[in-house]
Image 1 (spheres, rainbow, N blue to C red):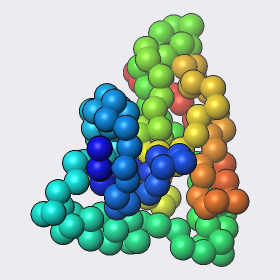
Image 2: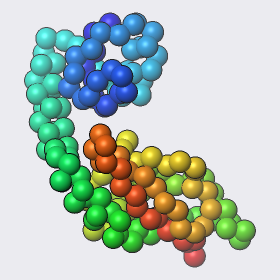
Image 3: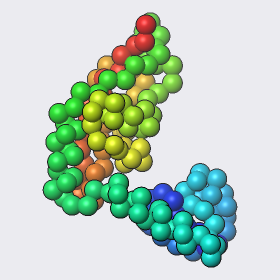
Length: 149
């Protein structure tokens, strides 16, 4: 099956790449999760759009990644969540929630797939989350979860 990737997939490719995968992998995993679209001749325009969008968002150099890392480490990110009296959350904080909170706090726009939560955030308090900025550079952001009134 020939597909066009719309998201970075480990050991397969980056958005805009045309890949050949087994039918089951494409049909059961890549397509339903919107990680890829079917390849057609008319999809060449979509490939160009995906590559341009990726180039605009991508951190191109290590110096740029270091700058973003220093911005993240200086940032105070706070997320208001629903929690019980014992301090346990009703659900968990997702990478998308963290990306939105970082942007609201005045930080850089982050791709939710680059945010790595080692242990699910299910309690009130301060948690450290890793953000993969470049191949060899990982930043850390401190996220404080507070209960909604």
